[in-house]
Length: 84
Image 1 (cartoon, rainbow, N blue to C red):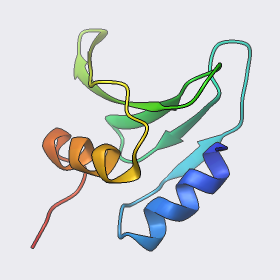
Image 2 (cartoon, rainbow, N blue to C red):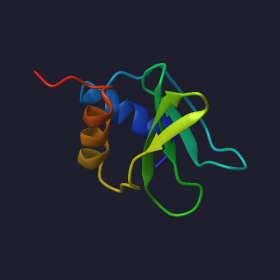
Image 3 (cartoon, rainbow, N blue to C red):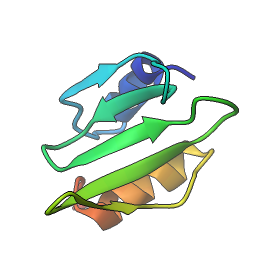
Image 4 (spheres, rainbow, N blue to C red):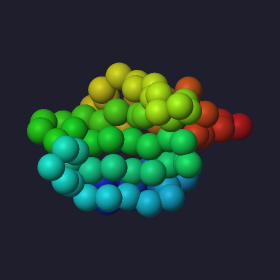
């Protein structure tokens, strides 16, 4: 799945998307969800990881996920999505 495709799925589920970038030499793609939270797509194979910037060049990496619902759950835990 590309960053563009996953961004569209996130948007349909109410997840904010600030932008996305296609694959490069390091990642399969990147989706910016908030200023401090993004999703990195695996370069080889499937899956994606939620990443939260903590400041001072420190990051919290969540588990590699292959299911959309698990990625959204991690985005909720990271604080990017508020469930009402």
